[in-house]
Image 1 (spheres, rainbow, N blue to C red):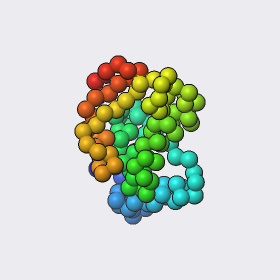
Image 2 (image 1 turned 120 degrees about the vertical axis):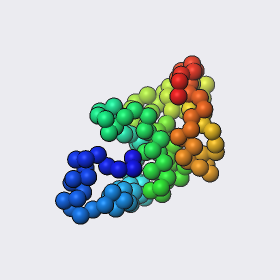
Image 3 (image 1 turned 135 degrees about the horizontal axis):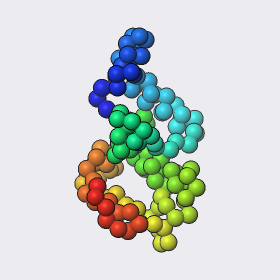
Image 4 (image 1 turned 135 degrees about the vertical axis):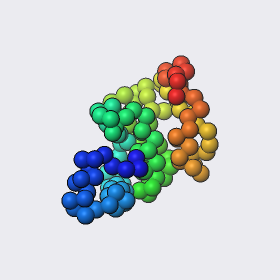
Length: 132
């Protein structure tokens, strides 16, 4: 998101805060939560309105890396950690025999460029290809 929705922009203007300042404060806060041991799960409330379209979860994972999580930790918030929090970790969130084969294949190396999450090459849901 490069600019905030109008209602958020109006609230920020009333407080004299820029969008960049708000994003930095959120990143700092998330970093403090992580360092304090709070379990983080990526989520973006996709689909609840025009400003929350589907397909933006990679932004949340990338923001966690910016906040100080390692790539592995950030990815876990959307995979194994999310599956555990949702009570489906017996079949989701890991690559292992007996688990659903839910995969996102990207162009690039996530360890060196987490934004490669934005370039999906293929997606498998329960082992079956779906359109990325």
